[in-house]
Length: 342
Image (cartoon, rainbow, N blue to C red):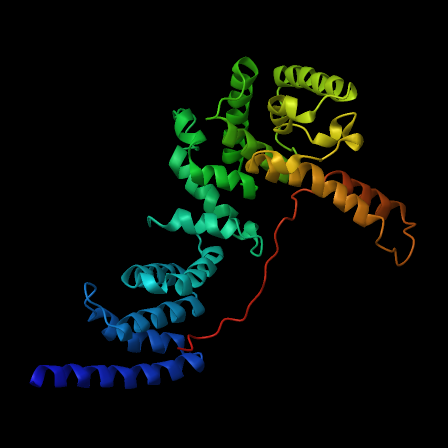
């Protein structure tokens, strides 16, 4: 009966030690807390960790995050969530909060999943993780190598890339050139053969990215010729009273390059029935069509505190209203970090 007594004594000792370390955390002595917790974490049996040991690991991760050791914190949060999956929902918000402070992508199987969760949540600032996504894509597709061969089928089915271009600017000459080349290939394929189901997600994602970046990526002369033909087709069809959904494919191709506001009949377009469209298309048209109209209506209700008479101010305002790049579709909610309470 001696072994259980030893185990109980160890648990009691650990509990007292964790209480003392918890006090250090509240005092902001994070490095001291990490040092004190290290023996407990190192002695942990990862095949059968105790609740106290997992708690100690989470305290280490908290202390690392608050002291700027964000990469180590991320890894320890992930390990803790894997050791005790029942705590995943509690731990994952802490994992996500590490991402904007990382300086480079991490080689972890769940890293891309966490990034996608981050920039799909509009309560976070996507600009904070843009460089992480850029670095990841540059490495994956060897974008700094002019002679690199990229598998087209791999790209159009890459869920991380599809999500990234919908939510991020991806500010880099390498990613911009990559997106421009990919857009052209998709466009020419679709003009020739229509948009097969395999190309539908990437086409919609490209249209989302173009709207997000205010259509800043250059267009070649031969693409401009084809786009003019598509615009004429759309304008003619809509002026004659045709249903916009009947020309959804050419409209999606057009939106990879130009805003829907460039269509002559834009102001008269009706969004009736849009809820019956495929969900990804609904989301796109919410951004490029319905929301701008809502914003225009709301703008008329906002009172001006004082008239703007400065010529410079008026020109700056016109410039921004014409091209407010990059668009703000998310916000950063600042929260005060606090040590783990339980």
